[in-house]
Length: 487
Image (tube, rainbow, N blue to C red; front, side):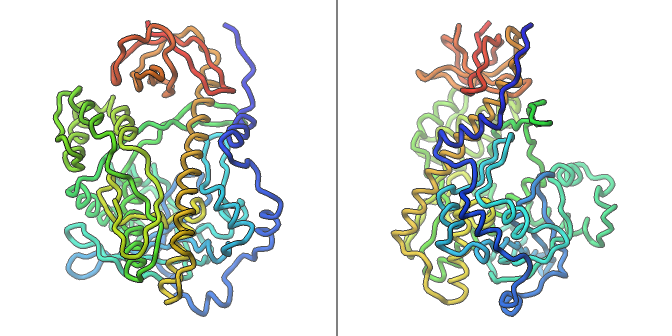
C-alpha cells in the first residue's frame, strides 16, 4: 500500500477561508485596538451594576472552550417555580460601535470552528480572556431573568448589568453522563457546597421547558457532524458529539433567554434582529420523504405532525435517523437573520416551535448577539435605539450571508480532514448509507470513520437512506473530495 505525506491542513483551512470571502488573520488595526483594552471592572460599571459574585454561577461547555459567553444560576421559588438567571458576557462595553474591532466583527459575522483551527470573530485576547466568563474572575455581564412555571412555560423577567463570578467550568460529557445515569457526583473534588443540587435544579427547569416546547411541536433533529481529532497537526480520528441532557439543558436555557430578550425589545417598541426558520418551502419533499418511510404527513405544513413523525422514526430506526434529520433540515431551508420593525410580526422559528427568537447569548462569537446587546442596553436605559430599521436590515442580510459562507468553510474542512484520514485506505470497502441522490450526484456516509463521499461508479438507482457497501477509490484533501464506487 502506498503511503502519502499528509497535506498541511492549516494551509488548506486558510485557503478555504479566503475562498469563501474571509480573512484568516486579523488586520493590524484590530489587534492594536484590542491590545489597548484594560482588563478588570471599570469604576463606572461598578457604580451602575449589581454585584452578584456570591451566587453559584456555573458554565457547561466543551472541555476546550475558552470563549465562555454565558453562565447560569437557578433558585427555587414558591408554587414550585424556578427563577433562572443567565449572565451574558458584556462584549459591547469592550467593543464600541464603529470601532475597528466592531467593523471587522460585522464583516466576519461569526467565529468559524473547523476542528483543525478556530478562526475567532474577535481576537483571542478579548474573546478568550478579557470578556470570557472564566472561573474565579470578576466579569462584567448582562443578566437575563425569567421564571419557569410548573407547566414549563416561562415568564420573562428583568434584564440588567451585573458583576458576576463563575464558580465552576463544567463539561458537557461529564455532566450529561451524571444526569443520565446517576452515580457518584463527578465534581466532588471541586469542594463547592451546593453544586450538585444546583445542577439538578437547572436540569429540572430545562426538562420542564423542553416538555412544554414538545407539546408545541419542536423538531427533535439529530444530524451527524464529525469533528477531527488533532494531535500535533495530524488527524488521528473523527468524533461525533453525542447529545446529552447537559446539551439539552444549555439549549433550553438559551432559547428562553433569547425569548426574554425579544420580549424586552418588543415592550420597548424597539426594532431588532430575529433568528428565523421559515415554514418549509419544500414541504412536499418532506411529505414524500415521510411516505417513503410508510408515514403520512398533511398536505399543508404542520410542525406538530412533523415532530411526531420524527419522534416515531427516531424510535424505530435510530441508525438512519441522523440522515433523515439532515434531509429534513435541507428541505426546510436554512435559518436566517431578519430585521423586525416595531409592531411587525415575525414568521418565527419553525424548528423550535417559537415565534419570538433571536441570537443574543453568545456575543464573543456571533455579531448578531452584540447588536442585540446594544439594543437591550438602550432599551433598559430608556434611550433611543442605536440602530435605524434600514441599518438593521442591511446587517441582517450580511449576517445571513456570512453565516452561510462560514458553514461552507466548516463543511469543506470536515471533508478535507476525512480525506486525510482515508488517504492510506484506498481500495478498502466500507458499510455506508446513501445521504443524497440527485442530478448533482449520489453521496454516501460511511459508518467508520463517519465521513461522506461521492459515489462515482455504479451509483444508479440508489435512494436516500439505502444501506450500501462501497469501495474507496480516491481522496483529494486539497479539494475536499472522497470518491467511492458501489460494490
